[in-house]
Image (cartoon, rainbow, N blue to C red; front, side):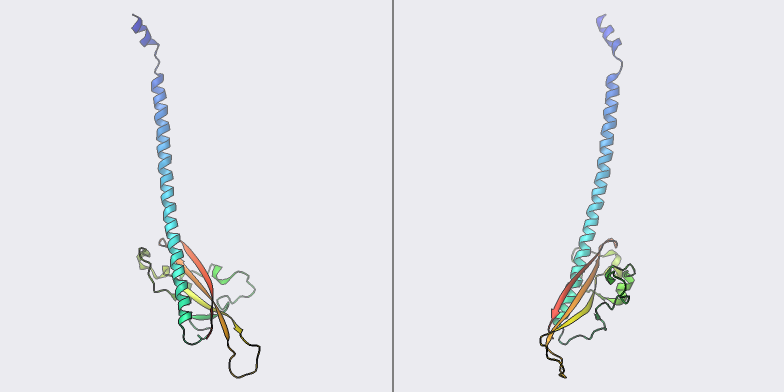
Length: 186
């Protein structure tokens, strides 16, 4: 008789608490899946950004090596060496030419030297030539070793060049620009 009375007082609180716990565990599981998906996207973007930097660095080194191994002084304003700011004909614009929005992949293909290097372990999407690294060499200025002027021979000195390179990541969205100043005596 006492046992029957105890069973009648139970009102199903354990069932309600277990359902609340089940909802909480489901929310935790769904949230962790969303966080994992976001972390995976972030890792993919980091890899693509790293590839863009490495490809830009490769193109930059190619431009520097080309200058270092040139036997004669390259002519300015002919490919692959441009006059300084020849890419930016609007001198009133304070934005450097490499930040202009019109400098897209088609522009780089038309005006820059495409890198022939490939990065081991990274494949560019479908071999798209717009995603290959490029570099541009600009003549900055000549620094004469002497103050003597008026002779028919060019004075000895050092030429300074700015090498600008662009690399694109595997997803085609990540882009990196790197620059260096290279000095060369001819």
